[in-house]
Image 1 (cartoon, rainbow, N blue to C red):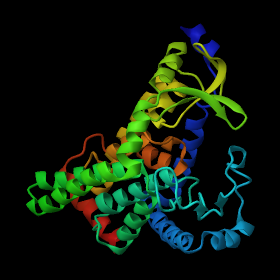
Image 2 (tube, one colour; image 1 turned 90 degrees about the horizontal axis):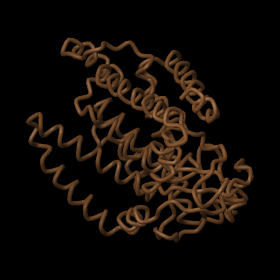
Image 3 (cartoon, rainbow, N blue to C red; image 1 turned 120 degrees about the vertical axis):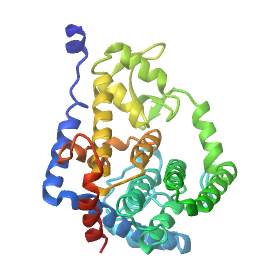
Image 4 (cartoon, rainbow, N blue to C red; image 1 turned 135 degrees about the vertical axis):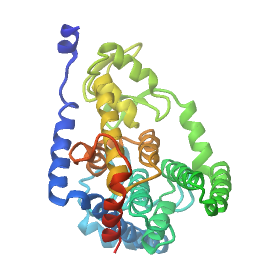
Length: 360
């Protein structure tokens, strides 16, 4: 077993955890328990900027591109794949000047990210922070900005994650005998089901990813075996067979049956972690998720305790969210906070005072 680990061990991906953990530790020491609230505030500001940019894109896309082009520092990102209208200025991204795409008839809002989908993940997490942790209403001005920005992303993953979060959030309220949340819950279910069936980028796109398995192709100049967001299990299984403990770094070359020596990749955090870091990496990922969920319950007296893991797990099937420092920070902050092993009612009064402080 030791020889198997040593023979297949490629540290590229495993270096990732210590580096990001160090960054999380520094951020937590600098901002303490205010870090999460500050993250949501920053995302609200960036969401507002993105809405302005998106509206400008609707009015005159070419004019917006000409204004932003001098500040573009994308470095020709995506040009080798045939996209020449990508502009990134740090706080805002023009993902595509083409109004109509394969699934949408309006421009997609990528915000400060390189792609609309990952931007939607940040927005859903910010809504979770403001609603579940900071106890602000969804009807508040900042939350409305986040929801509008989320709608403009037209992201399948973002919509599904937000829908699941709302269902669980309002259901947890009903369980605690707050029956006034019943009507909003029913409305959300109706809107969610209708949207999933009728929006082109919802059910049709999900069906496509379910049907699409692993396939071989060229990504730019690199031959790559790509696993679908939902159908990459054959790649995961082959990587686990190579090394079940440590996996195989996705940046390394590997042999796949009938294909030969090529690179492999996933657009799915869970698959990526298992392939590149094995069962050890997946165990560490789960540990982070559990510890940070525990932290949110303790510090913010969060009663809908499954909201955070539900959002993380759902969005993990759409993107490699674990590679985003802010999201990684939210997932691993519980490792550095002083929280009791068991949570009881004694902490309620203390943390409710803290919530009132940051709310005001």
